[in-house]
Image (spheres, one colour):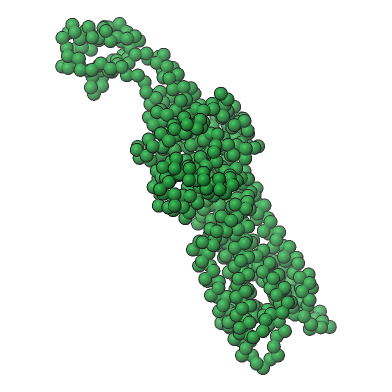
Length: 310
Length: 307
C-alpha cells in the first residue's frame, strides 16, 4: 500500500486567519477516508490545495506522487473531484455535460461516448441521460457529479460533502455507490463530511479536523479504543419501580464511577464490568429489570468529544 | 483550448442573448444602409461618389446614423454582452471548479472563451457587411470594386480588434467581480466613460491648455490637443481609423489649416497609404486588448477556485 494523498505541515493562511494549520494527512491506496470536521474547519481548503485549485502558504503536498502546485495536470489526470454543490451547464443534457468533461480529458470521441453510457448506467441515470440538467433534482445532480468524476477513469476520487442537502434515502444511495466503487474498482476515496452517522458506515479510516488542525487520524476502531481507554464501561440501566432508592446501593458497588439520571433509567460510567454486581443487587432488592445495556461510544461521541476539546 | 473554444462558440450561437443581438444589429444595419442607399439614389444632381459602397457605410442622414457610427457605438455592447459573465457565470453556476479540476491549463479556458467570443464578433461583423453589400447591389445595380472590398476587410479587422477590447475588458471584470451583475455594470461604466465623458474631458482639458483660441493656428492646436487626449478612448481610436479607412479621400485627423492643405491634390489615397495613417491606431487597439488579457492572466493563474 502506498499513500495516494500525503501532506506535510500543510498550511494555508488567509490574511490573519489560519485556515489550515500544519496538517499531516495520509490517505492510503484503496481505502475510504472520511475527512470529518464542522463547517469552516478547513476541509474544503485542504481539498482545494490537494487539487492545486489554491496554493498552500507552506508545507508539502503530494497526490499520487505529484505536487499539485507544480504538476497540477498530472494530479488532475488521476484524481476526480466532486465539489460541494456541483454545478452543471444547465442548458445541456447530462450526456452533453459528461461528453464535455470527457473531451477536456482528451478521451477519444468513441471512447468518450461509450464511457458516458457506462457511467450513467453506474449511477442509475441511464434513463435520464438525454434530459437537460436543468430538470434534475439535487440528488440526481449529485449522482451525475459522481458519474462525471468517474468518466476519466480516476485512481482516486475526492468528494466534498457528497451527501449535503440530500434526503436520507438519496444519501444512502450515494454512499452505497461509493462503497461499491471502492470495493469493485479498488478506487481510493476521500470524502469530507460533517455528517457522522452516514460516513461511519462506509469509512475505513477517518481524520478529524477542527479549526484547521488535524486532531486525530486513524481507523474507526482505533478511535473508539482511544476513548474506551478512559471510560471503559458504560451502561444504561432501567428498572421498574423507584430507582431513587437504588442510587445509594449502586454507588456502593465498586467500579461505578458516575451515575447520571436519564429519561429512562440511569447511565452508569464504570471502570470495570459491573453487570453481575448490578444484577445480583437487583435480585436481592427484588426489583424488576427492564433493561441493562452497554453504551459503547459511537463515532458521534468520539467526534463530539474532539470538537469540545478543540 | 480547442475544446473550450468550440463549446463556447456553440453556446454563443445557441444563446438567446446572441439571437437578440443579431436581430437588433441586422435590423438597424439594414435600416441604416437602406436610408443611405435611398439618399444616394435620389441624389441625381451631384456626380456619383467614387466609392459608393464605402459611402453606403459612412453616410448618415439627418434621421439615421451611418452604419460605421452605429457599429462604433454598439460594438462595445456586443463585446460586453459576450464577455461579462464568461468567468463569473461559471463561478455562479458552480462549474468553474469542476472544469478546472480537469487536466487542462487555466489559460486554455481563458483563451478558449476569448477566441470564441472574438470569432462570434467576426462572424457577426462579416455578416452585416455581406448584408450591406447585398442590399447595396440590389439598390445600386453594380457590385463593389476590389479596393472597396479590401477596405471593408480592414474595416472588419479594426472592428474585431475594437470589439475584442471590450470583450477582453468584460472578461477581466468578470474575473475581478464574482457577481455577474457587478461585472456587467463595471463594463458599462467604462463604456459610457470612454464614449461620452472622454470627449467632454478632452474638450475641457484642451481649453485649459490652449485658453485662447482666437486665431486659426490656436484653434487647430486646441483641436490637436483634444484629439490626443481623446485617443485614450478605444472608441476614438476606432472612429478615427474608420474615418480614414472608409474614406480614401481623407488624409488628416481633425483640422488642417489652409496653409497645410494648400497644394494637396484631391485624389484618393491608396489603401496602403490609408493604412499607414491608421497603423498607430490599430497597434494601440491591439495593445489595449493585450493589456486587458495580460491582467486577466495574472489574476486568473493564481486565483483560488472555490465554488
